[in-house]
Image (cartoon, rainbow, N blue to C red; front, side, top):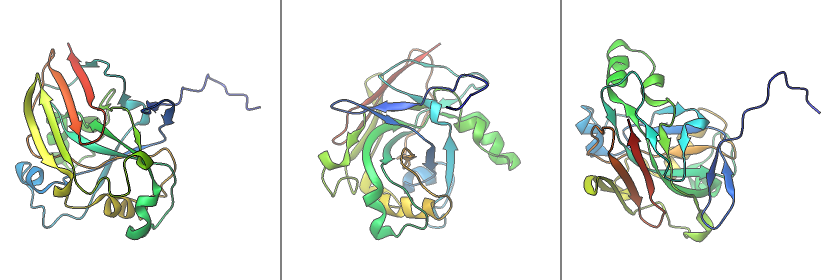
Length: 231
């Protein structure tokens, strides 16, 4: 028995449709993976290979819980995304083998302190405080890949509504890098492991939210991700 000098923190976990919890090890996010979003952020999608940033595992927010408006920002943005949950891992995974690593899928929100991210970009600094803050990863219930079919994740409608009005809309088929390509590229940088989540990018239409706003992210075939921004 290990004699810890402090009480170990709880394991972050995402509820699974039908029962059970999926333990979260790490959260990776791929940037600018939809061409229209890359352009709205001022970048050329034809030139960028996939790149990644991270959030802490305990940034997840589940069950439709309220998200406190974070400190140190005046420009909190929404980004709705398809989230991939890995049930197995590996390094240097071939694209053809990558989808076999997927345990399931969820709808998620990559919440962003855009002003902090913009300042970090301008100064050539890391994005951590713009992306990886507390409660910055609301997520809906996971659905097992086995329940969705082998072709799931190649296309599907993705939408973000704020107070019942559509803000973002796109299709998973619009991804620059497919899910297998994203997994393979990430596995060349780190050894992937069971429990890893990958946020796969957002379509155009990102914008600011304020306290009191109700957010609902919808991805075809998945339970919605919902949260209210608390003041």
